[in-house]
Length: 397
Ligand SMILES: *Cc1c(COP(=O)(O)O)cnc(C)c1O
Image (cartoon, rainbow, N blue to C red; front, side, top):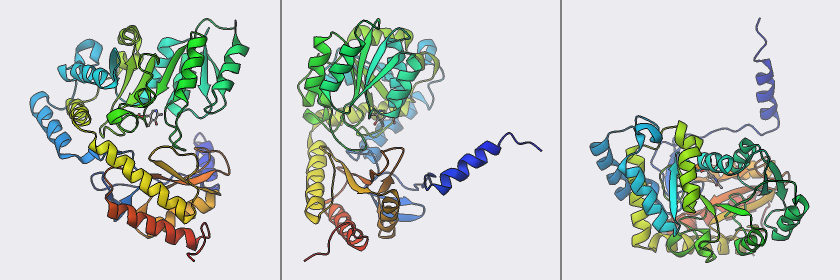
């Protein structure tokens, strides 16, 4: 009798026992304000589809046209025979959009962090990393082999202390932070971080996955939001959130991008996104450049929803963006809350340890430009009802 998988059975059973087993729901519709989840039509408060572009007719048409013209697969890694004119065009258009010297595209945002961090620092170096950085930054940092010095979340003074303490112990250094933190919706204090980075002449990298399409003029991202153009060396982006498609990129100084074409391992050893993806991404950039309407709608929706939630007595934490955490504390309460929402046709996930610290469980609401006023009001009504039923907020007087 083989016993080699016994440890897995035990691990999986333990997850179930601790209520930490991740049950993955299946979507059977396009993304949008309403989706079909496990056969039920529900109001969607879970997706990163900030601008509603994931099922936009213009992006779909661009993808169709690209399939007709270029087929479905890239057929090789980009450094051998897989670079299409579409990939190059997308890189150029993204550089213009972001106001940077150059960009290089990857298969995902996750991959972009795995490409750029190990290309910039190695075993003799140090990475100063915000303690709440995204998993893909953590993995990219580990992959680099550099020493990782975590600093207190969004605390530029703690960052500077960590730099001072490490003085003389490394060859090169890199400061890395998320732009917008995905579980709390707060924004990195970029001007202060830039000052520290400049004072110590250290490379600075920002992962703008939840900032682009959201922050800055027409959704140009966190660097634009703070007017820090030219002062952030590396930005990582994703095409899978506000842009509505899939893919990632690194944006910044031209020599960094040039180096990644030589040494970015996911660029060299994994095929690029398909022609349909690249064409749809290009169309998304067009749309953002043509009009700020969707970004404004997103913010109007987010402000309205948060204001009404606070008025009802919910705690929306430290959010400064359309990411709206509804702080509940207890993991079981968050789980019950999410289930009750679903019973009332509202889809919003409970987020608990280890994604957030113990005792900080919450429901995370993702507001989108795809939501209509009616959708938001329906969501608010259900949140109010469930909140009162579960004793999270008080009865209306
Ligand atoms: C979502 C996210 C990513 C991953 O992006 P994908 O394109 O989905 O791989 C990377 N970094 C941060 C900060 C993110 O929020």
